[in-house]
Length: 321
Ligand SMILES: Nc1ncnc2c1ncn2[C@@H]1O[C@H](COP(=O)(O)OP(=O)(O)OP(=O)(O)O)[C@@H](O)[C@H]1O
Ligand SMILES: [Mg+2]
Image (cartoon, rainbow, N blue to C red; front, side, top):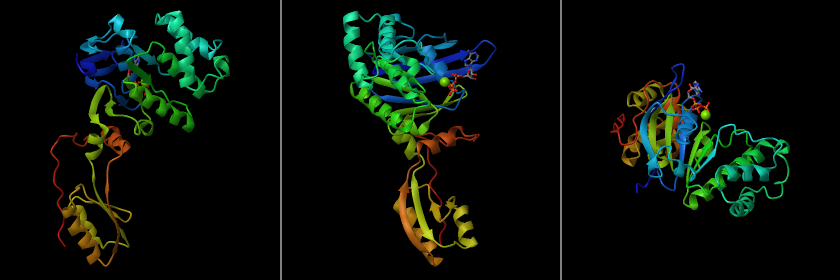
C-alpha cells in the first residue's frame, strides 16, 4: 500500500456562482506526520478538507485516502474531523458530545464508554465532563471538539483552524496533544492561517493561496531556502560602502548586513570591508528564514514568489574592498 495517506491529483472545486476555490491541487501526505495546510482567508483550505471528508463534492480531479478512492465509506470510519467553527448543541454535556460522535461513527456502546473516559482524560476534561457546552470556555469547547474527532480511533485527523480563539496556554496544550497523536502513528492534517502555531510542530507544510499551492515540503527544506550569513556591526557605514554592498545584492538594515550565502568564505570580504570602514563587527551568525518569512514571501502581495526548494540558487556577488 502507498505510504501516502493522502495522494491527490488535480483536485478542483468551483462553487455555484463561479468561485474557483481549488484550481487543480496535487498533494501527497506521508503517513504518521503532522501536515500543515497554510494559507490566508479564502485560500481554499476548508474547501479541501470538506471535499476529503465528503461534506461537499469536488468538481474535478482524483485521489486516494488511506489507499482507497476519496469518498470511500469504510475509509471515512478511519477519519476524524474537527470542523472550522465547530458548534455542538449547547444543552449537551462534554461527555455527551463525544458519545454522540461515537454514535455517528458506529462505535459500539462498550467501546464508547471506554474511549470516552480515555479521551476525556487525554484532553484534560474528566472533571468538567458533566457540565453543558454552554458553560464551557472556547478552549474547553476545542478540547471536547478534539476528543470527539478521535472517538473512532482515526488514522487520519483533519483539524480545521483548531486553535482559533484559544489562549496561549490552551494552544501549548493543543500542540502537545497533536504531537502525542503523531507519536501514536496517526497523521494529523491541520488547516490554519496562524503560522506561529504550526511552526513548532509541523513536519511538512503546503502553502496555499487563491486555490493553488505555491510551495510544499519539509519545514527544514523550506526554511533553508533563504538561509545566509548576518554580519552585525556598530556604527554607520559610509554611503560608498553601503551602495557597494547593495550593488552586490546584500541587504543592509539597522546595523546588519545580510548575505544569501552560508559559505563562510563569502562572508570574509564583507567583514573586511566593514572593518576597513573603521567599524566594529559585533557578531557573525547564520540565520534561517522563519515560516512566516516564507509565507509572506510567497503570499504577501509579492507577484514574483521566491524560488522553491530545489530551484538553482544564484551565488551572491560579494563586492571587493
Ligand atoms: N459555499 C460556498 N459558496 C460559494 N463560495 C464559497 C463557498 N464556500 C467557500 N467559498 C469561497 O471559496 C473560496 C475558498 O473558501 P474556503 O472557505 O475554502 O477558504 P479558507 O482557506 O478555508 O479560508 P478561511 O481561512 O477564511 O477559513 C473563498 O473565495 C470562499 O469565498
Ligand atoms: Mg477555512
